Image (tube, rainbow, N blue to C red):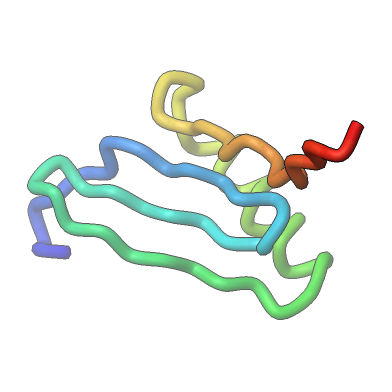
Amino acid sequence: MHEDDYLSRVVVDTSSRKFNLYSESGDQKVIECDSIDEFMGVLEFCREILDDDVLAFAGPLVANDNSL
């Protein structure tokens, strides 16, 4: 990201403990957390500093079982 870029979206993927950061210019960065404590710390920080319209959560991954 460039020095004058701003975050336009942060998508939290709770299944893989990742944060996908998108800048207003279209750049993307991924933050991967190694532990649940690290993930929760980053999540808490994001909730404190980001507006609700910037922070989003990815949907959970579910298996599609067609045998039922």
